[in-house]
Length: 192
Image (cartoon, rainbow, N blue to C red; front, side, top):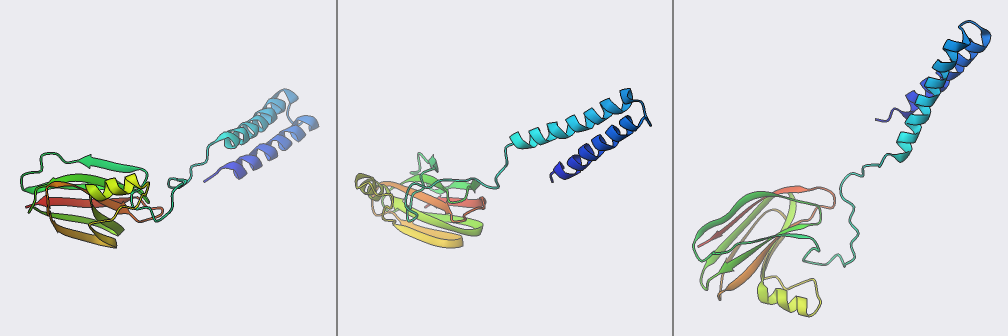
């Protein structure tokens, strides 16, 4: 809440009152003059402070230079998961994803391994599994929309199960579909 109006009223009214009191002789001018000046200077300084104060805008303002159909956001938080030849849970965490942003995980699978990817949030998210070949192909064409292996779009609870048909690297993208709300997303990636 801004105190500009009360400070304006107190500053201007107090200055006028003390100028009148000082000029009428009710109080000596040596007392009324400095009090009036103090009230006026306090108001002026507050106005200057308000003028130069930076306004806080709720949320982040981002200027998108790429089309909205883009699958891979410009700013992606990325984790590379090395040594995933074993089995079990390789990721079990809750992450904060900013609006219209994504978190990316890179996983390496052997032929025949099963990957289960779960992502849960309070508001809709998109979960995608993209193989490295499709990502490289999209990059070589200058596209920002690679073909996805599997995806779940605009859901609160997403699960993808995938059996690797070859050895290689896959990328898991967890997108926050919200325009203004950062989301805490629970992510679990398991390999069998």
